[in-house]
Each structure stands twice: as structure tokens, then as C-alpha cells.
Length: 207
Ligand code: ZN
Image 1 (tube, rainbow, N blue to C red):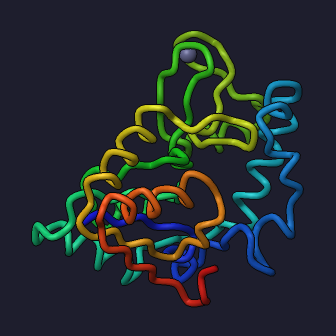
Image 2 (tube, rainbow, N blue to C red):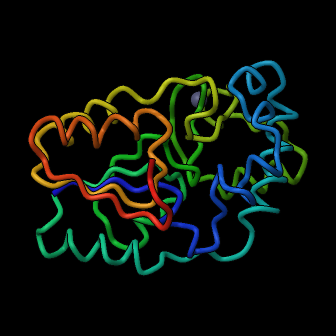
């Protein structure tokens, strides 16, 4: 059994989704969070990023019943692989062991020079204190949120793992994902075409 989750599993934890009517991209301009904006104006990018996180994701966010159910399935040995489009880290917090994060994880930053990863919280503090853009303590290069920005390629290793899991799945659960964005759209199709049973769990009808 392979499960893939999208923004819908985290909305009950108070995390806004991206594409619905009160989604993030109705409030903020996606161009401000494009990789080309990060490259040309890392200072402005980081200021906007911190503002968005404080306004949209502020407060304590906890895993909900959906995260716990998936961690439970895994603990009982019924779930082989968990793939997530989310960058909130809530699956890990609920106890999932090693989810494949195809869009990265916003709880981390990555150095654009030496690729060292570290936690985002101290970096957010440094940005608030005026260090924009924040720099790597090891090599001095600019730090980037460890998430896939608009215009960026997906991490190859994670994508490869997700694709092989989908291909060999007997059952593929797609949960809380509109299945409109690649590769989320193609993973369930891949499972289905290889003889897997496809199960889509969404509030709204999935086209
Ligand atoms: Zn570095």
C-alpha cells in the first residue's frame, strides 16, 4: 500500500491550502515566491517569505487525525510508502518514519552553496533581526527554504523513489490532493496502469 497526500490532509490543522478560494495564492502573488525572484532579490524574497509564514501559518500547528491514521497504518505494517506534496512536516510529527517529500520541507533551509541543511526557526529569527538574506554559517552563501519553489525542478531522488513506489503499489491511496499538479497527477495513474487499485479520498469530486 502506497499513500500520497496533498494540502487537504493539513487544512484541518489550520494550514491553508494553495488553490482553493481562500487558498494562499489568492492572498499572495506566486511570482514573489518564484525561484527567479529568489535569485535576483533574495533580500525581498526572504522578507516576504517570513511575512507570509507569520500571517498564514502563524500559531501552533499540530498533526490531525489524518496524519495520525497514516502513521498508525505504517506502525501496523499496512503502509509501505508515504509520499507527500506537503512541506509542513506534520507527517513526521505524527510519527511517520520517512515520508517522501516531493516538494521539500519548509521546516528546513538549505544552503545554495554547500547544500548544508538546518532548521528554519533560528533563521526566521535572524531575518526578523534584519539579516536579509540569511547566510550559511559554514560557507557564507545564501540560504534558501528547503522547498521546491515555482520554476524549480523537483528533487530527482525523491521523485524517483515516488515513481518506483507507485509502479509497484497494489493499492494507491491519493488523499487530499486535487491531482492537478505534476507529478501528483501522474503517480496514481502510474499505479493504476501497473495493475494497482486506486483509491481517491477527497472532500470534493475529483475530475
Ligand atoms: Zn553553505
